[in-house]
Length: 102
Image (cartoon, rainbow, N blue to C red; front, side, top):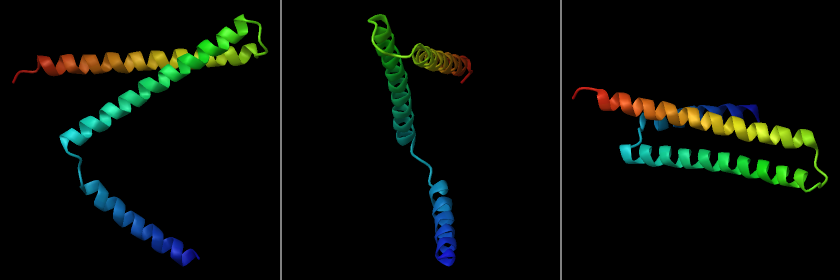
């Protein structure tokens, strides 16, 4: 069995080298980046929704742990703050590119 595993690793390493030499087209890179941003924003939205649900359950007097509500709220807050910082950096980079002389 170990011999087969080593052979598999060698083939995998060769495939990685081939895949690394192939660069995506600008359109593919744009689509990939757009998908990544969409997924990240959707994840932040999901965290916010979970936080809102737990907060509503706590307000209504349902059986939820306060510490879980607080942890979920902090996760949502951190995710939103991180997203806003990334947005600010992207806008800042865009403004720097616009200011470059052609």
